[in-house]
Image (cartoon, rainbow, N blue to C red):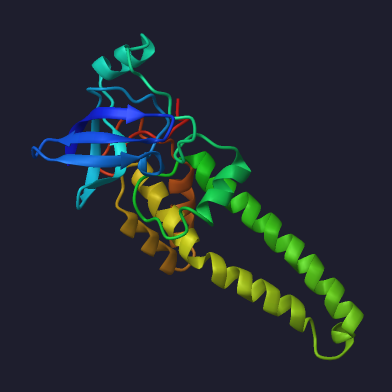
Length: 217
């Protein structure tokens, strides 16, 4: 659903949206999906959850951008927007916390590869810890690296859902259905196709899965 900002208080991170359906919806900073100033009259897209607006996207228009850059009266910066551009580690952290099972929206290349990079770093650290413990316990000469196997197995199980979720959002970012992640089930070629998809630049316009991710030039 679409509507426009009626009021927003950045001090408390709350405000109201006037929906195109004629109803008024409460908004909270935590439901904003990108980093951009909020001001009265700004057009937004959101999901209505009772009388509360969820998953709020700012509708990018030339008018909104001009007003924001001109410093419109009442414009409020969203200083803690969870959808803002982050560091590689920041994207990894958000993927395994806030976006753990988030299959909606879009994920830029930096977000996807930030997750991949720190996942492998995390696995390498766990492997070293496991090998050290197995060596101390004498497992390496007897039963094999039991502790290492358990640690790595639990880690993989723990990231299955966020890994699928970010893969789905990466497909959305280039304009494809998230169901393309099922290509991973095709031996060899499926993984190669998904790898190519992961390298494609973000669509530099709003698509059916959301606006352009923060930080995309």
